Length: 146
Image 1 (tube, one colour):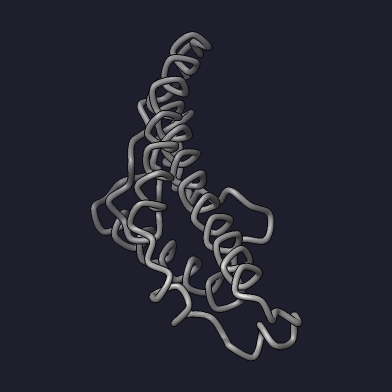
Image 2 (cartoon, helix red, strand yellow):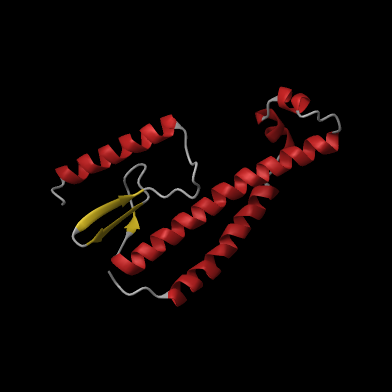
């Protein structure tokens, strides 16, 4: 493993956090209230006792921003992890489906899926991830990699 440079990480974060914020702005600029409302369950508004249009819009925008920011920030953290792995052990973005990062350390080939939250998926998403890793491992074994 190569020596870790905190200055390079700071530079990467400073350069790429701007992209995160720009993507957040683009997301807001492309926002269409009609398309957001189409995705919402109208009974939820009734259950939340939303009877005023401004409450509906605020609630809808808050939910949109929250999920949008989580996805964008998760993408940012994935890029950061790939950058750090690249700097320390020549890691790289994986071409395998469901695998985000690959690197070698102590002659072991590591496959990593990067998740930015503690409760990142339901049981079917966990099964899909397990299936993706099994397929990636099978491909690696066929290519005679350790």
